[in-house]
Each structure stands twice: as structure tokens, then as C-alpha cells.
Image 1 (cartoon, rainbow, N blue to C red):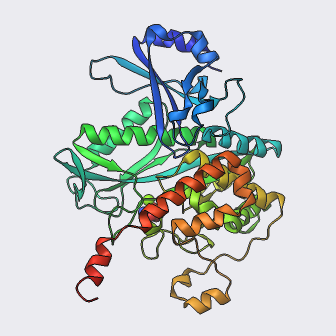
Image 2 (cartoon, rainbow, N blue to C red):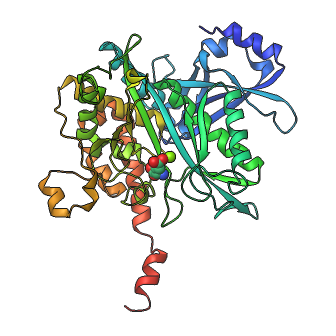
Image 3 (cartoon, protein in one colour):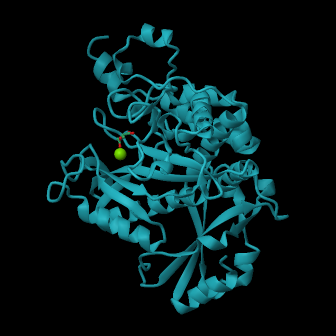
Length: 445
Ligand code: GLU
Ligand code: MG
């Protein structure tokens, strides 16, 4: 257990000049306020500090604007780089509280903690790891372009893979910030990369996503590049996913594993998968929250479109990776819809809620999908009862709006804000006249 005094000692010993209090807003955007080390005392860490929540997207109205940032003491880290003046900077992750100290209903991290508590009431602890993909693009005149900086493909090496040094710098910076990377490699598309996180408790993994995006963007910029987590930046090639691997533990035992069952999947794991599949349409607005997210979720680019599960079939929504020889009890499942632009706290909240609903409700798990699912006609698929993921943000919001499970997991405050905010995004998009329309219609119609 880290105490406020441990952190104060570290600040002194390591000559840290500034401390960032960081939190994630409902959009998934990392925000911070910086304190000079002379202003930092035990109180800030233990009691928190007041800030004006009315200016933060998705928080509160002007008339109730005072809120508290409550640092989570175990999350203090030293940033890998000094600031422009050479000063060292520390950062700590915070929850948002009301002035009376109660958790604030609009805090996404608090929503995930609620889901974790629900799992704990059933004696489960969720462990998650990620495969986070992103693009590195060139910058021109200070602005990002969609020109990739290499023409490499999956697992390529330098010098074809021009991102190797940048990736290595990213991994080093991440490790300096205290989280362990399993692997990093070039992805299928030119300029596309992936960093794989190691297993950790789901809250730490969500915190790591914010740190990861911060590190990747900054390292890219230091190398004159622009990093993006936009799910589908370029038409006609793969987009970027953030596949989420997970299992539930009961104490030290992996509750997803049962020797002798088909694929090693326990009853708990089967219920969890069935829950995910059943609620998938309602979760999708959260796991894929941008207009652009739905340009990734189309056939032909290794991203899921059908609500199916399978062992080792990369077109399925839920995949059960083959366990390593000798590590059969490491059974886990992979949810492949999630993209790297999501709010990880909200995404993991709804994923966990759906899985738990499947376990508690004893949902039945249908047969694993055939690998030839893409060869079936629309009618054949319908006859087999295979459902599709929502095809647009508007469609996903309709599915989410009526889901009690999602409303419960997010809480009414975030649920309502999210729908309002995202409907506005959709309306903005819908009213645009796009290049596609001009090219297709203007000459002929
Ligand atoms: N980039 C693909 C996606 O959009 C995934 C590729 C892979 O299987 O790693 O989900
Ligand atoms: Mg990948």
C-alpha cells in the first residue's frame, strides 16, 4: 500500500518539480492540472483538491461546479521526460468526487470501480490485457497527414519497418512509467503498429490505456511523426482495433478454465461469452464511440462484423485463443470489437457487466461459428440466426438507449450525457456533404 508520505519522499528524493493530477473525462480524454512541488502536501494526496468541474465535458452544470480530484495513491508515476525547462514531472491518476466526498456519478473510473465491486460480490476479479493498434503518420507544416512513414507490413523488420526505433522508445517510456509490455510489432497496414499489454487487474489496464495514448502521441511527436488512434484513418486498408483479452479469477484460480471441458472453457467462461454476445449490440456505442469506428467494423479487414464466437477465427467477435502448451490453465477470451479511441473505463465497465449477466443469468452459449461464415448469403446467415454488430454510430446509440444493462453499468448520469453528446456528433456528421457524394453524384445527377 502506497501512502502519501511514500510519494512525498519520492518527490523529494528524485527532485520532482511538478506533479500532474490526472483524470479521464467521459469522452475518454485524459485531463490534468499541474501543481508546483512546493504546493504539494499530504493533504492533496489524502483529501484531494478542488477544481471547477463545469468546464469539463460531461461533468456538471455551472451552478454545481465544485468538484474534488481524489488521487489514487498507488498510481503515482514519474514521467519519462523532463519538461521544456528540464524539470522532472510526476503524475497521479485521480477519481472525481463531489464536495461532500461521495463518488461523482459522472466519473468513468468510478463506473469501472462499481463494475469491479459487482464482480467482487460474486468472488470474481477481472484480469485484462490488450493489443493496442495505432498509425504513425508524417507531419507537414506542423499538421498531421495520412501519409505513412513506411511501406512495411506485418512483423516486418527495419529498414522496411521505419517505426522500429519509435516503437522501442514507446516501450521504454511505458516501462519507465511502470507498466509491462508483452510485445510490440509492425501491424498489417503500412505505418501501423501494435503494442501488447501484459495481464493486469482491469482497473490498472484501463489506467494504462490513458498512459499508453499519452506516451505514444508524445514519442511520435518527438520523432516528428503524428500518432493516431483513429479507428479507420485510411479507406481500403486495415483499421486499428484494441482487442481486449480477459479472464475472471477466483482467488488465484482462473475461473475461465476447466480441464476436460471443450476448449478448456469452464461454465463461467461460457456464460461470460454468452453474455457478451447477447449484449454486444448494446455495448458497441461504448466500445466503438466515434462515427469513424463503424468504418472499421466492416468485412475484409480483420475486424468483426458478425456476433459470433470461435476458437482462433479472427473474423469472430469473441475469439478463444489457443492456450500455450503447458499453460492450459491460462484460458482467456478476446473481444475484438473494441477500438483504441474508446473510453477504456466505460468500455471495460460494460464488457464486465455483460459477462457477469451471462454468468448470473445462466445464458446459453450457441455453437462456435463456422469459418465459412463470410461465404454465406445474407438469407443463409439470417436463417442461422447470426446477428450483425450495429453498422453506424446512430444504430449503436439506438441499441444502447434501450439497454438496461448498459444504463446500469454506466449509471444514469453518464448514460444520458453519452447519448446526448454522441447524437450531436452523429447529426453533425449526417449533415455533411462528403467527397464521396460529390464525386459520385455531381457529374451525373
Ligand atoms: N487491425 C485489425 C482490427 O481492426 C486486427 C488485426 C489483428 O488481428 O491483429 O481489428
Ligand atoms: Mg493486431
